[in-house]
Amino acid sequence: MSTDATAIPATMPAWTQHRYGGPDDVALEDVPVPVPGPGDVLVRIRAVGLNSADVRVLRGDPLLIRAAFGLRRPRVTVQGRDVAGTVVAAGTAVSGLRVGDEVFGEITGGGLGPYAVAAAAKLVRRPPNLEAITAAALPMAGGTAWQALDKAGLGGSDAAGRVLVVGAGGGVGTLTVQLAVLRGLEVTALTGERALPLLRDMGAVAVHDYRRTDIADLGTGRFDAVIVIAGSHPLRALRRLVVAGGIVVLVSGGGNRVTGPIGPIARAAVMSIGASRRIRPLAATATPAITARLRDLAASGSLVPHIERTFPLSDARAALAHLDTGHAIGKTVVVAG
Ligand SMILES: NC(=O)c1ccc[n+]([C@@H]2O[C@H](COP(=O)([O-])OP(=O)(O)OC[C@H]3O[C@@H](n4cnc5c(N)ncnc54)[C@H](OP(=O)(O)O)[C@@H]3O)[C@@H](O)[C@H]2O)c1
Image 1 (cartoon, protein in one colour):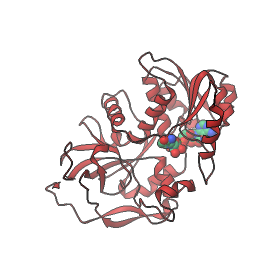
Image 2 (cartoon, protein in one colour):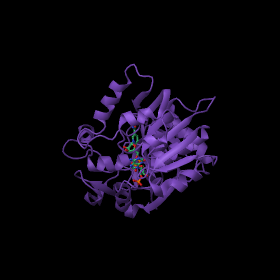
Image 3 (tube, helix red, strand yellow):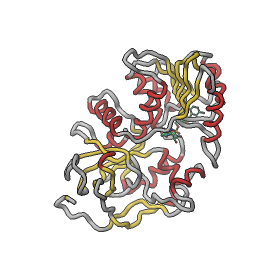
Image 4 (cartoon, protein in one colour):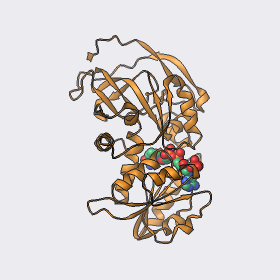
């Protein structure tokens, strides 16, 4: 393993949880600095973009995710998946990255501490003209937005089309709106009132406050695609919004606290059999090739993620609490020293 000349400590203070719960169940605790495996690198963290995935795993909500993340307590005890930082050690099988490289990407957790281990293959290089804070805001939310637009089949070379983004004000939503505009789509945004001016500035041609708007009033057969990121609007009402041949993409399926979106996804599958208006769930995956596309757009200034708040690493619990309200606008980023 190659390492930085600067000594890497044996332990570090990281925001750790030992049981499912809220931000108050996270505490700064001395834990061993992780040791990279052959295909991994150790990253000195500069910035961590938080996502709803962090608070979902923190809470073990819906209960179904505990089957994957630990039945009684979380297996990933340090949250933080979208990291930007400096490679300080590289495993023996790593060839594409070296100590000193600036990188970012979506990892499987562990970002809320000074160091985190990441599979080298999951990271992309960060150029000097892209700030670490901006880079950390991109991977999961931007990757999800990208894959949702791809699933909708919108934004190819002959880009044209009308898309409704439901829940447009959060991390995934603001990036979906921006990427849709970049793809040449006509974007309508439905979300909370506070985010509406921002979304208009981002290029949405129409914006609606979900607390004052009945989605049925947005027009029957008016959109080529509806991308659903928040809310629990009835599937039939969502489907009525799209043209024949159109699609409703469920990024978030709503559902209950036990099985989460499983029920709506099953209903969507049944409703889509033989139907010209389809409803399809999205299961986004961490895809470095997409992270690299997002990087290039952000580095050129075409894509500017909206970072509503930053918090120092020493206050990461407050950052988790901010996201846990469910009303954060755009991205929340934790900044290490
Ligand atoms: N399928 C996948 O692969 C995948 C990947 C990543 C994320 N996700 C999911 O995607 C969601 C993204 O979360 P996020 O953090 O970006 O956003 P969020 O915080 O969950 O919500 C975003 C916005 O939605 C608005 N909203 C709430 N209820 C609404 C409704 N009924 N109609 C329209 N807008 C409504 C909120 O406004 P107010 O604040 O005014 O209430 C908020 O601005 C999460 O549920 C996450 O689990 C899925």
